[in-house]
Image (cartoon, rainbow, N blue to C red; front, side, top):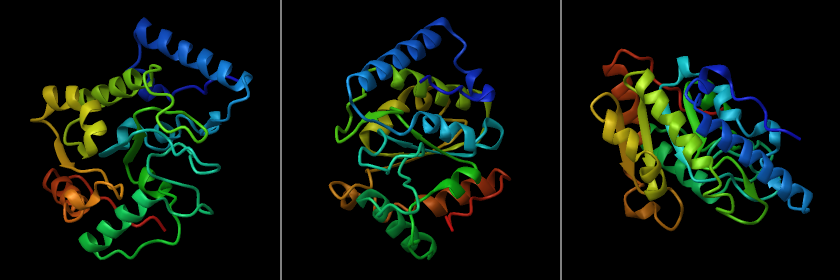
Length: 228
């Protein structure tokens, strides 16, 4: 199997030989892992799903995750999102809890955030693959360079993007973007929504209303944060 093609509007940010070599190395690594009998998430055809659902021209918000969920059937190419039939993971439960406090939107019966992506919310993980039951197993395989370059390309190409930065990992990935483009975009920093850190400032951070307030001030249509 091969990596699917990155959509052309995003691929223009990965035009260097370094990027192409990294993608080739990642594909070789994934093939070797699968030949060794390891299960990789998400399915190959979902690896670039965040980019496919959220074209550059429509992207107005970015939410960065760490790596895909590593349980069976969970990961489908969007950070923090799971397919409709999958129980809500703890971080997503907390995201919905904060959304209810912020906007009064009741928790949905499912955790599929595809509708957010189609609203212009880029749900991009730092690493785009993971081994079953092994969190962070595909870190430092080249994905972070790819995703960081995509985000930097987006920031240089557009104005008034809202970057929702949850936790230290997302902050580290977005550090180059913040350093170069902090005056051209909005950066909302808060702890990660996981149960380990959510009570340190994630709850009460009101990212959803703040995002829409900023977008409206820039004369950009707000996000409908319902996912049903």
